[in-house]
Image 1 (cartoon, rainbow, N blue to C red):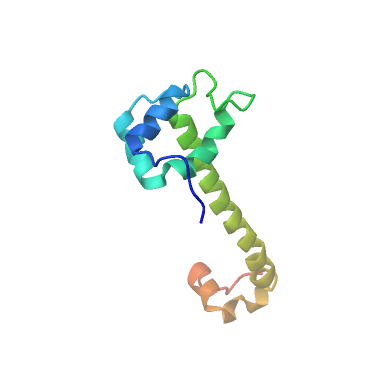
Image 2 (tube, rainbow, N blue to C red; image 1 turned 135 degrees about the horizontal axis):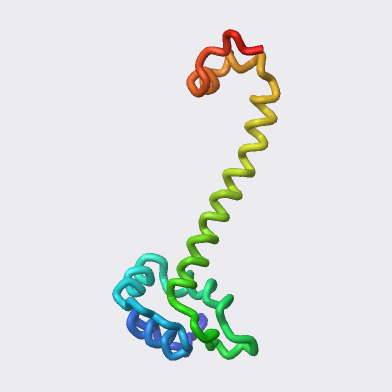
Length: 119
């Protein structure tokens, strides 16, 4: 069994730790809200982009909690967009490549209506 030397920290203690490392936290109640929903450990992976070089875990001057949160949400959107784009080429190759088959597929009829008059 693994023994951990570090004690678990509360959200307030995590915020204090981030603040000591140089992260500007303008709204602590909002930051606490995000930590309770996202978690410190998931968000901490995105803080590394804002660390000073040298492995000191100190933030670059001017780094705000919102910077980390924006990077996290942009990353989530990028993953969702990538997943969507991975599916689209399959749909386009499978269905749109055969326009004379569209009328047989209920999805295309619902989405585009009748194909009468389409050349």
